Length: 481
Image 1 (cartoon, one colour):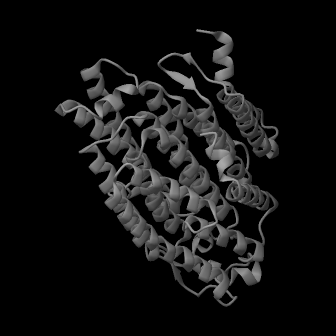
Image 2 (cartoon, one colour):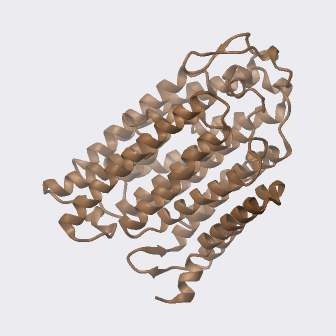
Image 3 (cartoon, helix red, strand yellow):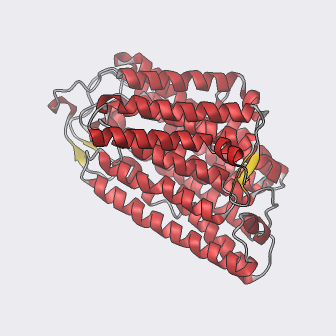
């Protein structure tokens, strides 16, 4: 093993680890609690900058052959994931004090980076667990609702179930092939024996559960609603990105044939349709985004049907566009001391008259998530469906496009609340996605229409600038994937 290669190839991970150690040391000593957030931002930004620099230099190598490797495309994917974490950290300022949140988030990011570079099932499993376990704690950290504990428990139990299914599938593959290399999965895709097919299905279902594909989606709406806004943004963007980039690595460039192709077409198609239909009836912003993310997970899994060479490009660009837009929407969400009140869609009524910046930013995010041109969401969906059509799955592509049109309704409904509803306080009694009544807005002395905090506004501006650049020059990213 080349020591200098190992150090340089793992430099983004080393910077994250250094940030974790510094944050923990500062917390133990009891100093710098106010600077913990900035330390976390500095560590993540430095890791993202290093990964971007390595990618532009064309660096590639395998410091641990068969276990961990880097390529320019992998490094660019890491850059995207790490860069998305910066605005999430900034917007967490109003929800978390001290260094617990940034330390846990950096720990989870470390797992995501391992996932993206994994060449063996051992590293893939390690990355999955390092990514997931801190999130269980993050859901509980801002304990503002009684259902937060239930949400974290449901996520923990179903996350453990997904891990068990993944390990069972890997065990079967190891028994058949004698290899822990992720290439064994792409080989098993074309195998006809029962053991290989069972292993592929188990691993695939584990990722379905992690990505909240129907019917393995039940945890997502509760977890998204029970978590605080920054944690929900993290789960909806970076955790989903880590899962999707990991499965793209597993599939590699292998051609997908029946019956695996049927699984990759039917389950994501059902997710697209059900996610968009269920989102229509939500009165909770976070539950709406949860069902939206279920639909978007369907689009992402559709990419696996396409040509192997274009999978990484389509998924990475989609992850970037989708992540930016979700973080943008959450960062611009008006603050409120009552978390349930803040989460209510009625809370957004007439927002343009009270807070034009937030309304415009959320509106732009909704239009792009709907996949309307000229926003980057349109380019992301175009890449997915172009690959599906090129692979010959015309029927599934058409059905997926029809399902995607359903999503336009609830995104435009948010815009209606923002711009076309009269200004004023929400109704005296509102219900969340479960039908539980919330206290009236007038009962709170805190101004529910207050502007964004400085850090949240900075996060919004960062995402908005990045989104505009991506809209104007998507080819700059696509040429590097």
